[in-house]
Image: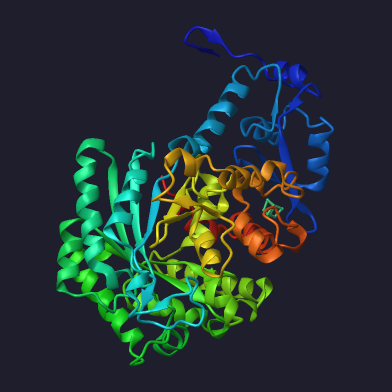
Length: 490
Ligand code: SF4
């Protein structure tokens, strides 16, 4: 057979040339269940293999004329005499996955005010009551923070306003948006804004400002009225009503895709995952993030974070994901966001910017936090820890430190150095490493050590369970696989 004047070699030539001659490329494996293993490589490509197949691969005994050999070769688990560009291609894929590191900090979180009109039991920011103006960010602090924002080399910048309740200091949000836009005339970044708000103060003035400046809103919705109001108490007991009214107003005035919601799982949420998801559907939201409680702030002071363990939360997540898949089977596309994140890590060549699932950690190099008083923290969790009195991850202050002083501080560099999964005991030979992260703040908060002992780590336990479950769905449930593939971002 000839193609453009060249002849293919006979099949036997390939078989003879490579049989037993291949070289192994870096890979790791992890047990999935009694009979199967996940085999993954540095760029996150994977195969699910039996133990005999895994052994024959490692012993270099896979015959060259088998599908298994071709799978191993095409996914960069081995190379042979015919793999002219295999290493270059692998390096290119690795660079693509690691590209986010060169782009540096894209998300800049401004804690506009610690004041809040809610008194949530699990609040992770240890909010102040709503009359303490001492806990508002000033224009001077915001200007200093903006100086740092525009030093970031990232071509895309997202400024997110958080609290407390940031709309209690709406005048400062207006100031920052106008000032950032003014400065961006020179920098020409892809500039976006998000306000994370409980929506109780959403009025026409706020909506018009959001519309004029293309600002997205993010809110909290914990489920049906009873559950939401129990988890998120507000004087007047009308938190749920204010939230769903706000969601409707924002959807109709700004557009359906301009508002999203997040939920937090308390002990009381655990039996109600289906009705929580139904609440999202009733409010025309097309995704949900089934989030466990973080061990920071009021969640620790009120013992909320210790009321359920990872195993119980995982049952909640699994039941929720089953229900989400059922909804998709009925023809309505509805996404569970953490699952989508993992699916993308498994199946897409690009990296995800999720701070907790990166090596090194995304703290400060993907997202950074400017507190109301000008203190700069490596992540939102680091700021929550500081509100509990522990400032271990404070990187400096916008009034006293410059860009280099903050991003090259020993605190940050030490944290980054300790957060390379590739050098962490247990992670370094774990097959799930390409999809996982390290979360040094979580490990410091729970184990007093930034690296942490992974065999005792709730972070490791949770993620390992999720990885296995999602891979099982992809491998063993063709209908679920079909749906999950539609969640891959391109
Ligand atoms: S944290 Fe656990 S699941 Fe993640 S890479 Fe480390 S050992 Fe593997």
